[in-house]
Length: 584
Image (cartoon, rainbow, N blue to C red; front, side, top):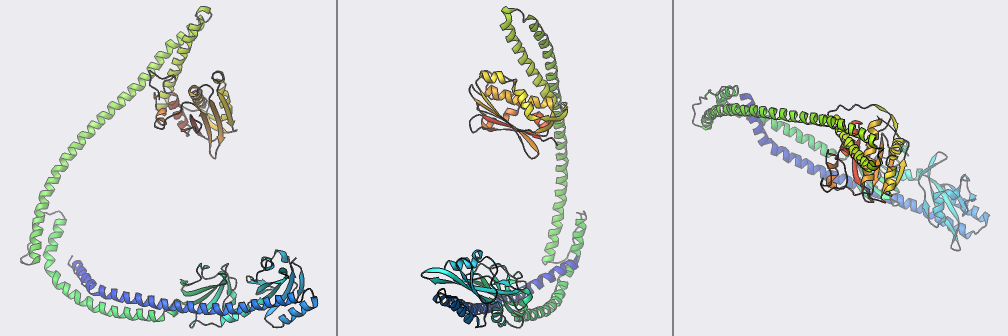
């Protein structure tokens, strides 16, 4: 323990003495580095600006030469011999590799050497010159040599009748660039607008990608791959002149300064550590007994007392420590009493919750049994009643009453079927028998059961059915379609519109039933899928039903791994969506 305290004290004293010195040295290095870097970058930017000026002057002179030749060709008129004499005289200057005169239609009129093979009319540089501009081409290869071309229009009577083009080897550009030296190992290179190197001391780098991305500014500096670079743009950014120098060479003075400061700090740190260690050793020696007491208390012995006979800060610390152990003993006893009481309350509450859960489970089972028994007991007399009504159908005088009684009995039987089915679904006793089904055929088959009612209400029903197949239980799918069509016909007023569609998606088949009926408020869109829920009040509602159709449909859809939801129809009414996994 002592050694750790001694180490901390040594560290603190060293930090207090050395950190200001280190910070000061660091700030000096930062300021020096910033100043040296700025100076080096300004120097490189100046070099790039000077090279740029030399290149612009040289290229502008060459462009002026070609422009003067174009005026000479114009003065020659259509005289072929005078044109040839003019371009031969121009060629003898020795700078240009070839000189060619091309008429406005793209046909060669005169040439020194190569008779350029190709469609001049589709050459972009030629087209620009034909429009009256002096044009300098990009760098390209001609017979294995990198060249640039100068294009100048031949104007007669305010009309461009031909274009003069002269090819010049890039070696003249290289001579200007390579003549510039930057320190011992720095260099200057050019990149074009496509980011390719077009001039470099190492000619194997020509047409490789540049060290730097094509900058957006006209001039500036940056650091890239250990190089300090100053750059300047020329020809509206078509060429970038880059002056580069290795960072360690440009900042050699800084690196030397860093090494000197590091050596000085090391010596100061060594002597400071020795002195501080000796001081800390003398201070920490009286803490031995207090350290032993702390370790004993940490092991759980709160009865341990520190015996330090001194009236200084260490004596005060020992008295405080002894008082702390007494308070800890009282606090521990209080916490143990509280923990026992809390544990008893938790056990009691757990027993109450267990009894409540068991009671709720018993009531739920009783509800399910009641529904099952009630459905069975109601279905048996209904079967008898409907059977006797079939026997009485022959009596003409009672036919209307018999029909009304039979319809009422059928509605009651359907309600019982819904209750039984919903009960089976909640008990997870409904078993699916899946087969491959054509959903469109099932929609058509189900619609036939509602055709008469829809026609009686003058409802217009349209279909948009794709040939999509699902893997599903036939009875369950028929019940899903039946309920959705039944609701659409029931809740759509006379003369309304109903649209039924089946669409094949990536992994699912989407069934949509849209109506122009009464619509569903937003706060009801989720509750309509709850059992026995109706939007209308039971005593005033105009539509029948127990509110079991949609809850049953949702459970059947989810049992197939699908989902169902409802949205507002922009034309009024609602759209029900059912998504079922596609048959694979």
